[in-house]
Image (cartoon, rainbow, N blue to C red; front, side):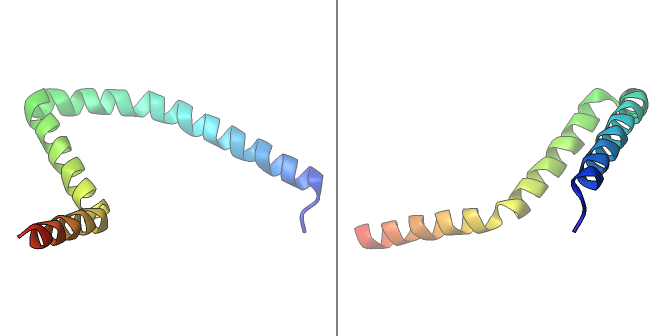
Length: 80
C-alpha cells in the first residue's frame, strides 16, 4: 500500500507530465493541421473528418440504434 507521500508525489508527477504533454501538443498540432488543410483543402479534409466521425458514432452507438429500431418495429407490429 503506497504511503500518502508517495500518492501525493505520484499526482504531482502525473500533473507535471500532463502539463508537459499539453505544451508539446499545443506546439505540434496546430502547425500540422495547417499544413494538412493547405495540402488537402478545407473542404475535403472536413468531409473526411465528418465521415470518420459518423463511422465511429455508428459503431459506437450500434447497440442503441438496434434497440431503438427493434422497439420501433414492435410498435408497428402491435398497431398493425
